Image (cartoon, rainbow, N blue to C red; front, top):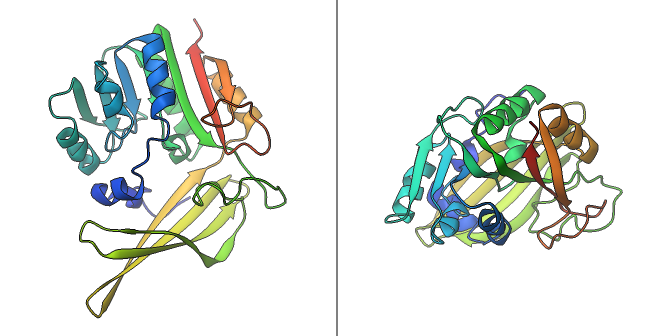
Length: 265
C-alpha cells in the first residue's frame, strides 16, 4: 500500500514542534480529563503537545508513541511532572493497567491505514479503558473538490480529496538554525483505499547552498457512518460527536469529526 514507514514527518521532533506550536485540542482533551479524572493515556502522543498541559494540572499522564525521538523530547519538556513516556506500537501495546481517559489527537487516527490497523488500535483501547472511562479522538472530515467551505481555511491541513500533481505552497517557518523554510506539497488520493498521499518539500538556504528535504505521509479518511459502524462493531458506544473544536454539530462543511466514546460491557 505504501513504500515507506509513514513516520518520515516525525523524524525531526524539534521541527515538528516548530511547525505545530498551537494549542489546538488542548482545551477539548483537558476538559475530558477533568470530567473523568486520571489516569490519562495518550496514544501516538508525539512530543506531548497536548499531554503535557494536562499533566501540568496534576493528572497522571502516560504517553505511548512508536517514534523514540519524539518521546525523548517529551521527557525533556515534562521534567518534574507526573508523566511516563513509553515506546510501543499502538496496535500491540500492553501496559497491564486501565485509564479513565484515553485519547488520540493531531489526527493520529488517520495514520492507521487499514481496517485491520484501526481494529487493532481499538482492541488495545478497550483493553486499557476503565469501564467508566472515556475514549476520544478526532479525524479530518472527508471533503470533495465540489464542496464549498473550509477547504483552504485551516492552514492547508483540511484539503479536498483529489490528486494535485503541482506543488501547493504552505506557510513557511524558521527552523532551529534560524533559516527560513519554504514549504510546499503535492497530493494523490486513492479513492478505493480512501488514502491521501502527501509529499512535502521543505527548502531553505544556508549561504548560497539550497537544501531540500522531502517527506511522505499517507492518511486514511474514514467517513462519518463508516466511523460509527467501526466503533459500534468494535465494542464502543458513541456518546458525543462534533464537527470542530467549538463543539458545533457535524456537517458537510465541518473540518473534523470529533468523537467521545464509552466501551460497551
